[in-house]
Image (cartoon, rainbow, N blue to C red; front, top):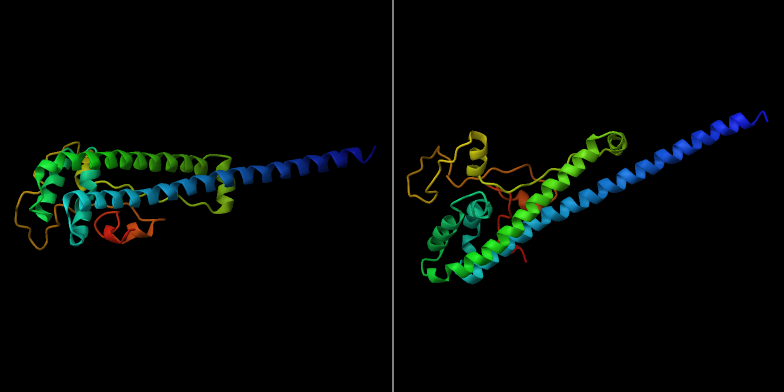
Length: 221
C-alpha cells in the first residue's frame, strides 16, 4: 500500500507529459497546415498574374516587350476598389498596340473580370489564413508550444495600388487621370509606382522593384 501514492504521482506526471506532447503535436500540425495553405495562395497570385498577361497577349496582341510596363499597372487593373481600372487597361492596351480593334475590348474585359474575381478571392484567403495563423501563434496555450518550435509570423503579400492605400489613409480619393500626359521631373516618382508588402515564400514576386508581381510574366510557363 505504501507504493500506491508514489505510483499515483508518477502516473499523473506521465499522463501530464503525454498530454503536453499531444498538445504540441496538435498545434504544430495546425501551424504547418496553415503555412502550407498560405504558401499555396501566395503562389496562386503569380499564376493569376500569368493568366492575365497571357490573356492580353492572345486577345489584345500585346508583345513580350511590354511585360515590364504591364507590371506597372497590374495592381490598378486588379484592384476592385480602383474605380478607373477599366480605363487604365484600355489606355494601356492602346499604347502598347495602337492597331487593336477596340470593338473587341468587351470580350477582353470579361476575361479580365473573371481573373479579377479569382484574384480578389485569393487575396481574401491570404488575409483569412494569416489571421488564423496569428491567433494560433499568439493565443494561449498554443503560443507557448509554437514559441518552443520557433514559429515566425507569416509575411503576407497583398497586391494593392498606391492610390488605394492613400485613399484609405486620408479618407479621400481625388486622383483622376492616371494616364494624363504630364512632365515628370527627375526627382518625382512615377505616378504608377506601387507599394509592396515585404516579400516572402514566392521568389518570383521578390524580383519586382515596383510591385509584388513577377517582373517578366512572359517567362512563366
